[in-house]
Length: 214
Image (cartoon, rainbow, N blue to C red; front, side, top):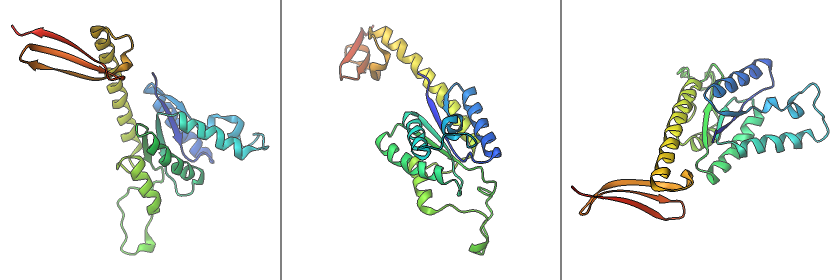
């Protein structure tokens, strides 16, 4: 099953719209489905979108996109109020769905330069520490990453997932299990009687194949 990525980030300038389109293209090339909120013209075509109940429809559509996603890739920018609001909801969702993958990057060119002034008021860039704490939580400690690192990580994840899917299909055929997704554990080894291979299904059933020692 193809995983879906939700792209969260500023899209209120032509430059940021081009950035979101670039991100969508990058992930589509890796084989993911991508939900890019700016593609929903019913709410995000600022020149002609129906204004009646617009705020409610934005919340409904984009929240549904977040909830249906397997992966969130979020561009943190201090002025992007909608994205920061989404980040709070993503924190709650991540607590309920630990398998949700969340990645955060930042397209502000001042972030990540390593420039640390001796006078605090001369700092080029900073993140509110509550917000940064949320970022650390949802990303499982990775924090703000470079976008290219995220792209490569998702490319590696996809390859691993495809390999595991093939392995599950082979195991299901070998053990006579109809649905590969029912397999949650695989084990192989030796005991006093010989060699064995064993799988455990989602309902707790264990299926074992044994071969006598030569």
